[in-house]
Image 1 (cartoon, rainbow, N blue to C red):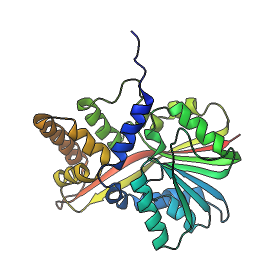
Image 2: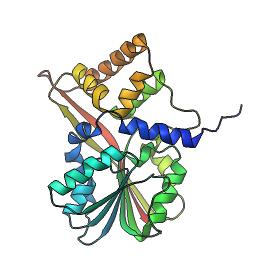
Image 3: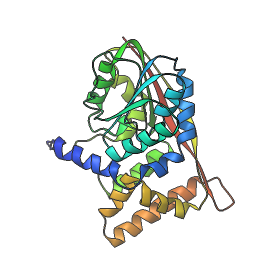
Image 4: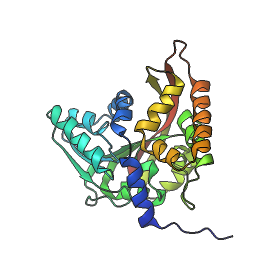
Length: 272
């Protein structure tokens, strides 16, 4: 049985539309603290050259710049880049933000001391191309740092629920495979001198119920918004019920709010 190759031009246009839908900035506000922790663990040195791939609204680019680095942020969603520019300007940070694709970075070879991506490059459809690009733009001896949702963690399970009802394009591997250690080793088998991976945990905290949290994501998170838009009324009700059930199952708050612990894989690769 042959697998139909996806039309990547059409797929890319669709992905851009997904990430420009809603208002990811509202989602990013709730993950900014864990982004700062991720950057702090890297230990970025003043004056180092840093590339933030799939930078979104700047959650990781900003703390890297605060550490004294020369930072470039790249993302496919122009509206998110505009938010990132405003956030940087409000703090007086000089960060270069430009439109770009994780599979075709608008950057020269071996240009950066640190190449980082948090919950971003993992969503590009061709992971082997992404890995090659991350390696290409990193200088020898430089660091590639990724934060990727794991298949077994809470976020991975929400993706599985959505994919069950709104199947992804054929031929595109699940993004959460970037959170699977053997898969990451395979993808970084060449061009890397050392590779380490650590499972980390973060908390989602929302001042409303699991049901309202699902509604929040439906309103602001592009992938969730677009998934619901592809279903009829009955399908939307079924997906909402499944997601609400998952958020409720994992919720540890007892005061009517939502607090959930989510797992991600912290990947550190040294460029050969």
